[in-house]
Length: 331
Ligand code: NAD
Ligand code: DAU
Image (cartoon, rainbow, N blue to C red; front, top):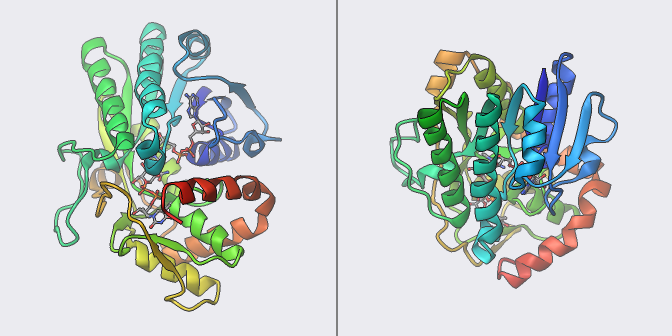
């Protein structure tokens, strides 16, 4: 099977490619990645059956040639960080909306199966005590430039399925953690701060809740949807991992042997979503998926070990990332 993976040099895409090569001897993988600040070619070095093409998902000529040679397209490429979308939304519109449009036109022309990787943030946020969680039927209500461009891209996919019969599925997943995540994101930022002896930085009061899932569980769900999902359908991916930001920071402080209050509150994110929570009943009952990483504490400890062992991987991006946070008032 010839698989085109967009964004395969980023966090989730890298883990997807590595897992695919490990578990699927029949897969030939081509990665299309622009290698922005978030992509790293080193992640794919030495992997058998993987070819990396540096290019833009919004470049129709590049995309057309690669899609023509694929049996399956899995679309991870995106501008993915909410804080960056508040500083400069323009690459979010180009990559997330125009890039998805460009891929959809190519899979339409060539009749290629397409899976669209999206986020639970398209549903907006929940109150802390809301008994309901996000489900496939929840109306879209995105808050940030990032999540609104992801919502726009999902709607394009739905329209291309209905109007043109494109063979697509969509997944909307909650917050991922694990190896190869950029140091701008919450968990790697705090882990690498702690390695450097710097206090973790918590936005606002820290009461915001995220529904954490290990990246390998996310990617196993993506494969379940590709293989057993119904064309035209959406599946929510989540592992019942709700934690407040304070709980996560205190767990990290515990791993580093530090006092539970040894962190700083910093300026909150504008429009900060309060709580995400996923009901993944459909994925579990219809497709038989279940998470393997059922202990967040164990998954977090393994992730900390990975960052400790791979300082050469994250160190080059750390200072510039913290500089961006200082400029945005989050340091
Ligand atoms: P990431 O920022 O770590 O990686 C994005 C990758 O896309 C990078 O390798 C980057 O170089 C590449 N890229 C960016 N613009 C490109 C362009 N124009 N053309 C080609 N490549 C380009 O992101 P991630 O966290 O791995 O997220 C991957 C996907 O999963 C995104 O679509 C995101 O919306 C979705 N998602 C992420 C999470 C999460 O918790 N991180 C949760 C749910 C869904
Ligand atoms: O829900 C899925 C989404 O999860 C994905 O679509 C996004 O691509 C991904 O980045 C993530 O979005 P969040 O905004 O939830 O993740 P982030 O890691 O930026 O922040 C997680 C929480 O931690 C959020 O409430 C903001 C807070 N935070 C973040 C940083 C960077 C802090 O308190 N301190 C920080 O330094």
